[in-house]
Image (cartoon, rainbow, N blue to C red):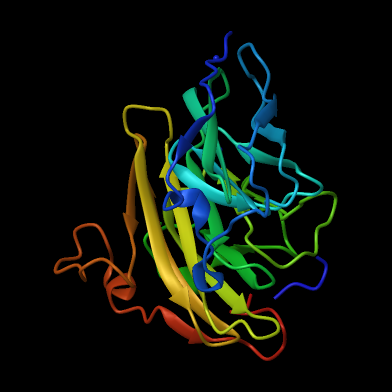
Length: 307
């Protein structure tokens, strides 16, 4: 675990009250996220602004009329994140997809659940590989670790253990161009909590990637539900998306949530070993992936699942 530490014209939809059973009303083992206010919540989205976006990372920021709501739920293109609020205000940068992007903010209090939505369009280059890890519980570390294949591999399907780059909180950039975005919220880079933990690569080397989550709870937190959202070649005709959920229970445990295969001609594949049926052939996944044990114990040296 670390100690240091998702274009002119916006479509505005009115604030609409919906049931408290919506996505904005849940927090894993803590029960419902409900602010203490009794009045309808006014949600103001100050960013992103109107116009076509050319930024790779877009800031989502705004405020809630009920400052007791914490966290707020932000959905980007259907992927859901919990973001802390400070005195009713929230902000966080997210990678966005080429083309249409839909952002929805939801907040709940005793009056009900309310939402506001914006649609904008991005002119950025397509992101070939994007991984976003979140958890449903505050005050825990669910660290994201990505193992990239090396660029000079003669066989891109070789076992990643024989040669890889490890991208995570202590090594935020790879030689090939992979980027890890630290979990910054309200200027703090060392707050355990919901995440999100982000990784992107615009030109990933061909081969197989391993994506892990490392769990370090604090206090009386018994377990969390981790969610890994993956997007390959987002915003293109060959887009592949997958959302993977898995409970994290044992302190220090590392789970391999996904393998990603990047091939020529923008072909991508995702295999979730904890959820998907085991492949019966090696047509896409080599035998070492099929045989891989996704649950590991952490290295006592302090870097989770190792180098």
